Length: 340
Image (cartoon, rainbow, N blue to C red; front, side, top):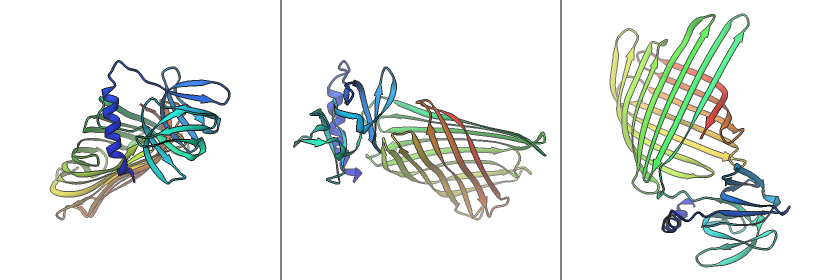
């Protein structure tokens, strides 16, 4: 269903580009109490309308309190009555209604018939940078004294048909002043979109564990991927990689081998993007007998307290089985994060 948007997305992007940089357009929302707000309509979902403004950041409005609205350019509209999704421009109408104008028709609809509205995400745009930093701290004093620190940082840069991603994870743990956990991980990837959905990825990773027998993991891989969707409601992609891995152990021994892996990255935004469900990870299978399988995965939930600050809860697992030295780490982390 989402694939039907792509030709219209490109048309909307070209129209916006032709408008020129000097023209600043704004959407307008009229409320039942007589107020009028201007900004950029980002999303309508679950009865909440998100309006991005210069004066108050992103404002969440109750859809039932909206009298009418208009958009300065075409946006994606989901009509629950017709079970259809299309690109249209919204125009002001009588209270409780909106004029939905497409390239072919123009209809006046009751506001409740609009189930979802979101901004298109074309490839034709300037560089977009986003990311997050999550910090978790656990300090417990009982029969044993425990100190656990964790820092996770993720970033993404998109420009045209390129997408670059990077992440840094660090964890340090002490029990009764004895170091029981000290590790970090680095990863970076670059995707080039061959089409609106298909892309080719190159990826590198490095993991260091100063406590476990399997002390180092490093690898390079490349392969195709498919972006099922990426919009204001979330994103989902799958990638298949073929690459070279290196395992090093505390006793100085090492293993090098080729491996095939499958990566996934899923996000779903709820309640006007206040709540985020996410999971990401990689399952890897060596092409020889170095190990049976390797799993590095995480799943969790994030709640945006403000536009920048969020609370998160994450369950993660790092497992290497069937090799010279096995590894099986599980952890649950909660804390505060910064998102931009």
